[in-house]
Length: 143
Image (tube, rainbow, N blue to C red; front, side, top):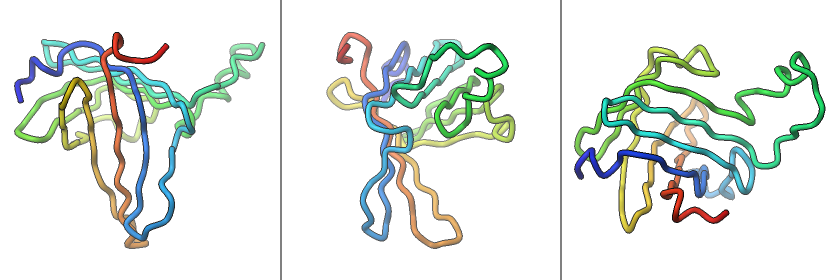
């Protein structure tokens, strides 16, 4: 795959976690999560994911800050590079400061205009979690 095929804007279509022990899959940001992923030709990226239906309410600035948590909103920016079947996101700025400086590696698949990024984590419990994020171009994204 050519890096040029990834350039531009992608809209989140689906975000799920499946488990190796057979339990039901989970949508970590809820059903209908929203997101935008931007890959620039100069190697920069921006990613934002949000729980659908987050309250806009009438909260003031201080109250609004309390509403933003890593459980319902993910945002980071950095550099990207494609190496074979993997894309690597090196984090420069993030809502979650602990990931700054880390490189997040995802298996990448681009088929029929659908971009799929997957990765797996196995915590101490021994149950592997497989994360799958599906993205589409804005013109292919339902309104």
